[in-house]
Length: 81
Image (tube, rainbow, N blue to C red; front, side, top):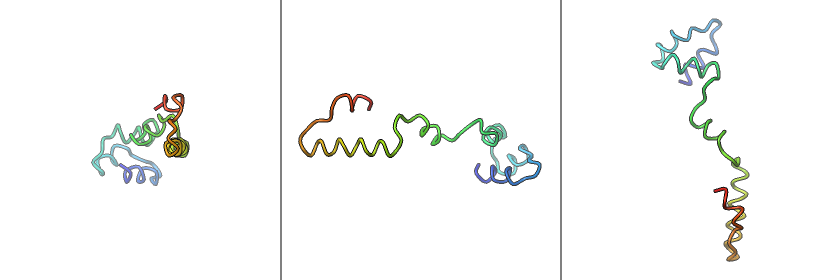
């Protein structure tokens, strides 16, 4: 899929059907990705997250430190998980 998208982007007059056949991918999927109407599952997952990676790491580190002192994390902090 990535090679097909690269080929489309580098073409002066892209032919989605021909490139889809060349790389053995679905024409409709290639068209949606090329026109940015569709994303990968990984991108969908990242967009659906409540916290970004840095925020999540900060919360996890805070909870670990609380546990080291035998203090449970506040329920309001854990409720989102």
